[in-house]
Image (cartoon, rainbow, N blue to C red; front, side, top):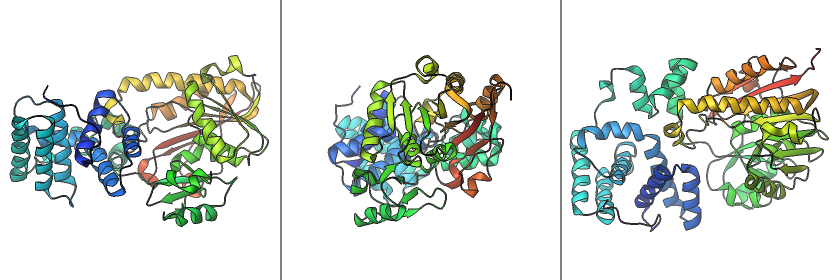
Amino acid sequence: MSKKSVVIWDGNVRDAALSILLAIDKNQAYSNLLLHETIKRHKIETKDRALLTEITYGTLQYKMTLDYYLEPFVRGKIDHWVRWLLRLSLYQMHYLTRIPPHAAVNEAVEIAKRRGHQGIASTVNGILRSILRQGVPSLEDIKDPIERLAIETSHPNWLVERFVNNYGVDVATEMLNENNMPPVQTVRVNSVKATVAEAIASLEAEGLSAKQSDMMPECLHVTNGQPARTQAFKDGLITIQDESSMIPANVLNPTPGMRVLDMCAAPGGKTTHLAEKMNNEGSILATDLHPHKLDLIDHNTERLGLEIVQTAPIDGRKAPEFLQVESFDAVLVDAPCSGLGVIRRKPDIKYTKREEDLENLQKIQLALLDAGAKVLKQDGKLVYSTCTVDQQENEGTVQAFLTEHPEMEAIQLESLPTKLAEKQANGMLQVFPQDFGSDGFFVAAFRKKGESN
């Protein structure tokens, strides 16, 4: 292979984007983590940061569409990195209006020379200039509607078919398109340390624009800047969290003095939200399968000034072996899932997940719920949440759990804003990415009524 070794950042945004895309592809790394790490490590300036983010995510999000557009123009075998360079360049030419197409072509040729040799540069130049002259092939030529929707929105066929079967063509199409839109930047106000007005004032004092959500009162929408770098963040006035992720703590709705178990708790976003809702009074045990992740929870609770959280390295499925049966007033099971609700934050998910993965996940979800039910007191509340939009993992898991546990009953979700309360059915709530610009999310609530009830 003719690729030369390169550093991720040498001041060239497009070259850096290509390095990140290759690393994601090779190492199955999450795009959001690698992008964030690159920006942080190299202290990339705002203008470059915005373009780097846009072309990295955009190329990933539309990978299948870009391959469809490239197919008629690529003759013979090309190196893997060259294909990624072509995707990256075509994304800029086809989707970004403010970058002149010839500039994207010239930059691609220069990168090809640096990473390869003149022959590769000529190939890249020839392919991209042919596309400029002839235009890309029409998606209307794809006769099968599922395949056309898959290529148009760049989601695997099996996933498109599954979404359509679950929710119908209209909802599925809207969701598939929404998955390619940039996410809204949101933060949660720490009610133990600040009011919403105080948090907004602190952010605005540093030049950020923030406004209170009309959905979740503790949520702020931030339209510029990096909240994680602000004094408000350092002082524990805010936490970075998607708005949908604020639903489970509201549904559990713990009161001060309760004893709460948060299973699969790392990195602690929902744990700290629960502690804030309890006004830092009572006790929360936050467990996670991975001991090193518990440090993240400890770090968060310290920054936020929350003292009621203890952490323990426990596999939630084995909770009854380590914890007293029927000893918790409330339990949150934010279960491992396919993550199909957060595709726009992690576009690589849609290419790496397989349909059989979902079957295995449901077994884990049911084992966690079973353990959670055992350590829950009678009349206690159990909340199940996922960041997926898959019916099998959500409604399917709930139904299977209720069938196996006659002592548990589904209950109405409480403490929800009106818009969300109206969407719940049978003690379950499915939020789609298109509903209010947040992640796809699912929440269900149960009460332990006891064997004889």
